Image (tube, rainbow over all chains, first blue to last red; front, side, top):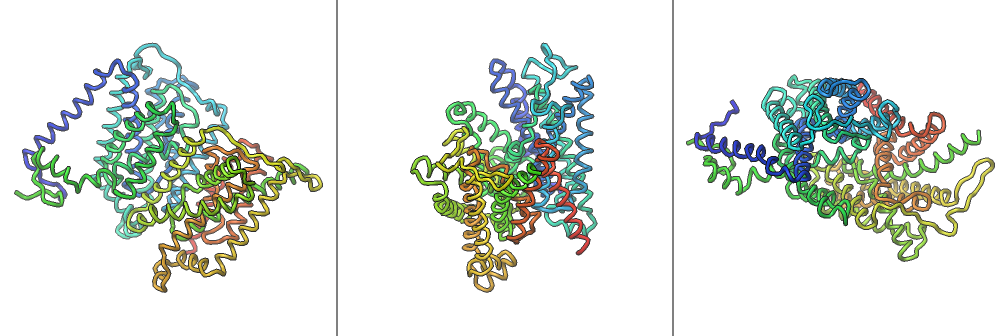
Length: 346
Length: 287
């Protein structure tokens, strides 16, 4: 019913453009093999975007603003590292365990907390994240404030998930981001997605038409936290070392910003915001970090404030009504659109 | 017993600051229904302003309090008028939330660029004077700050209760549309409210400077505790915020005395989640 009919020209050209984009992203690390720093920026951008996509399921789609996602990621990262170091497991085995542990913890805690709405829910996510961080800070088993590290591995080792070659991390992070995006896109168009969006618009109306808000909110937070746990696993394997500071509130805030700047109402929002903002922020950190530490966060904050004030729907919200879209999709890709960006029937 | 009394006194002192922060957060949350996530950062700005007044202009920290209050009031009113008010009502709660979050990130990092992340302190001739009341001792600045803070709390209570502006603020917080119907300019009230909240945060910071280190992240501890105070003390209640702040301060120091200082934050946050969930359950059952 909601399927739009695209002209064959547009479909062909859009597919070609997409294939070209993916091809560029895949070839890129090969050309950058001498520049580990640039590769690092891309890997970080993919990781942040993945986290932002995970946040957006709960924050953008369901309307439950969490400022505790770094904690979900942290639980996943800690579980997998502790499984490896304390129980001698293979990293690949620790991944499902990490996801499971994160899902169970968040499911149990938040099934009790979703009775709270709006700002009160946000407060609980902050308090939860801080409480978990404090537990780890006081827990000998988890390395307290010093943190825990994965053992050093020589060369590229797929079995132990450790690579000397950054390009492999690049491909894994890219695959993770694209995979999570496809999952989110799928959810967006599913019954679940419509239920979540209904809850975002009005919880009481959702309840009245037979959508149980509590059930769907718990589903959303469990999926979101599980994806964060996967990202946390990747983070731990990439940096080989984690400490409780990865769960700081500022980390949670930082990974929401791509979604807000890109446009939290769109599944693609975190994708656009993440790639743009993380690369810009890392560039600034690299260039000015020595003279003016914190300059990248100032830029982040200013962009965020300006976007919220003047383009409250984010970059994609602006794009969907812009002349640039007419040019890009109408002229270049040959799409038949009317003024509102809807498909013209021709 | 002596350590217990000493802990209670320390708890009372620090709790007073949580109260004052909570009151500012309370009126902002009460009137505009937004969480002000840069409240702790505004405390930090208040601290640095006091530092600047003291180190550059030679003004005593306590004499700087009114100056800090005025500066922060203007800053808050400006922030409200140019950024928050245009986003109110028309857009989602998410945007408003992250607007204040963004402001917090901005303030912290601007402070870091200007003052670097070094720890700074203010020392005056009387800052190391110790008073002793029987078995317990307390630094003179703490007592003075606590006294000033009590006076400000009482003044705020009467301001909101009896003055025309205070009545208007309460009217807008109870029913914004009704308030507009009877001719209250709600945008102006928003400005005053946010300015007042910012001034209270700034004053808290100014009063803290003599016995607390000044650095760009000094406010984050207080910022979240102010929210706890709002939730525990009840919306719109100044006495509620006052006692909730004192309770929180006492809880913290007594937990560090009896269970251990490292578990202090954990206990506070866990208690907060439990209180929040239980309270909501009771409210729903009553409804």
